[in-house]
Length: 286
View 1 (cartoon, rainbow, N blue to C red):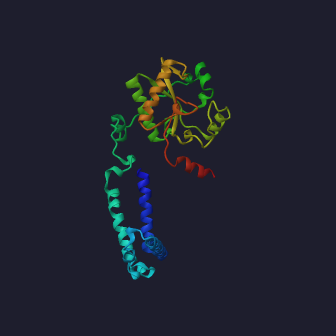
View 2 (cartoon, rainbow, N blue to C red; view 1 turned 45 degrees about the horizontal axis):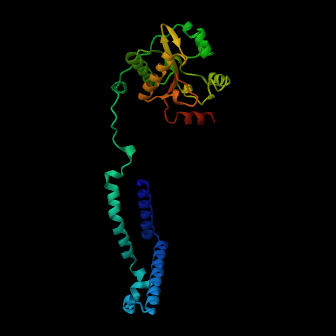
View 3 (cartoon, helix red, strand yellow; view 1 turned 90 degrees about the horizontal axis):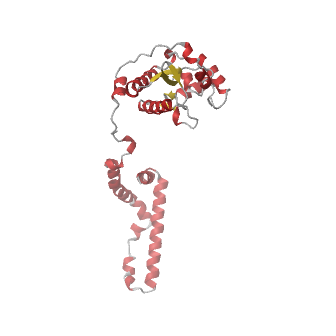
């Protein structure tokens, strides 16, 4: 309904502008008025010739001033036509422009409560990355089975985008303090060469090639859980699957995109989609 009102108002404004500023518009309006008047006169004449009671006074009714009704008369008074259109258009235009009910929902004030932890983060609280885990944590049989090339992955927090790092560390903090899950980063920044190498392993690993992943910009990370000092990656573990569900909820609450909602689900993946980053990288490579 709102879109229809906007469209009608736009068309009316265009019509008025056309009549005001373009001679062709005024000529068309005058000619249309003349044609309409001619049809009305012809209809009155036909009705009078049939001697209908309602039109016994047809000659008097038809005695409208030739000067005012003729095209020349319409030309002389076209400003009156335009003034009449403006008067008709003004009230609905004012209602549309000043009525609160016509405001788009997307610009209404948000009623959602702010997450106090996110608010603290945005106001300057800086979280520090956890200590690096021993290399052998990433070479167990379970880890190798789930992530064959994980040993050579980068887990350097300094290579990640600063804003993404703070959001991800906040997720780690909430997961530990509120849900009892200790988390670890499996892979953060990923070079274009490594991205292509992973893509060659097949779609079950990744469908993104070099330049198509947020990992290359330090805006994505793959994470898992620590239990008794060991990494738990597989979602076949009920405890881990529950953790992934909570992880996705917390990540989305701080503005990250969670891979668990994708068609090819990646439960441990989160990313921060910064507008323009992918486009700039694409143009730079061309």
